[in-house]
Image (cartoon, rainbow, N blue to C red; front, side, top):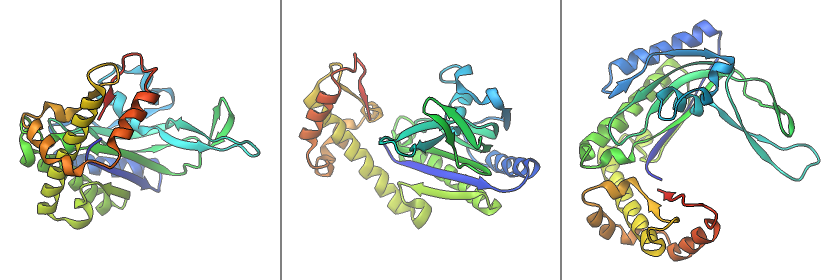
Length: 264
């Protein structure tokens, strides 16, 4: 939970042209204030499986994001399944905008036309080269990371990368929960991140009051903010309706969590 930029890329052409797109994006990233920037990575076949990499390793998260989620609805059956379709070819790179922010990955992949599943063969309908990813920038606004100026640096760095993708002609879609992609209005973005922080702090605090610190307790990055109590108080008016009913529902469906907490 938190303000996030979702984005997807698409490209036509042969592998040499796609490689050129990705390297042009990587060059643009070198001119932006990313905290970390990985090299362009090219993988094929079984190399695209994230299970071969350690948890927390940047390449593992890049490969997890590279998989496409595809709906499978067999004819004559009354159920729908979803399957992760790993790429058969990947040209991509990892970036990290900065403290408190998620990694943002960029690249292009090819996918199989048909994949065998436990339900039978799945037609993936994933032609050409494509990429779907997201970057949560919300918690870059923690004052311990640098506050709103740091959040703006992280958020706008990702936006600048998407501007470059649009310039190259390989941008498909962008959904910016801060509305900056569409409006390019900094004061509104600053106001938006403040509103999100207050709402998440109040929501997390309310759930913690209702659920306590047991196995159903809430874990939230906003709780690490030094001013979380002030944010929580300011966000009471932003709480969604029916939060008490929601807490009861969490209790009901979470009886088998076996000690796993809820994360905002």
